[in-house]
Length: 248
Image (cartoon, rainbow, N blue to C red):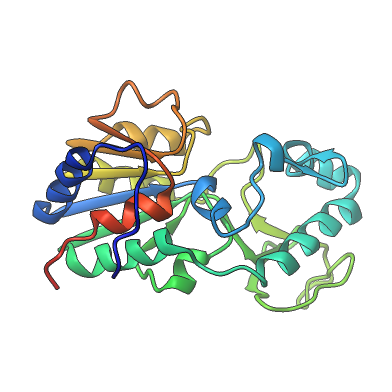
């Protein structure tokens, strides 16, 4: 894998983080919207946090779905269509290589786009669900509808109830058992890599404060930056490939 140029980051710091990963028995990576943004996926915060003039953080709520399910589905169908046009980036692919080389690796992601799985990651915990999945509002039945063009108000094949996206909306609890598994892995980890997340959304953000060593990769300073073992300021696609252990 070629090593891309990294600007404004001390190479010695990257080498130190890479050595920690290379010698670790257990590594956990926590990824956020910044990783997907480098593939062209709009974020919920910042300049990309709007859709047709509406705040995405107001659309992605149970209240918004109860009030106007067709509007919410219009947003998610548009998002599903756009995700079909993007590809995993070097950060996604580098995490696949780290998984292959570390004895015990877990990837906990806040992203719902499944770009990690498309890149080849296998041990993935989806903290906020997945946009490929749908769940019936009435009977609770879930199904994978990846690649399908869904109607404006999709209905459940089993009971006819209104389907909703299989993602965790603001104000909802994380999927049962998923966070607990991620927390246990992070507590046992030699290294926790926190990549492309502002560490603001809880409870997922609490994983960024666990582990013997915590390495942050982010273009900007975050509330976590002063608490981690090492903060590498730059794009995930530039830095994460340099953390891949050199041994096959």
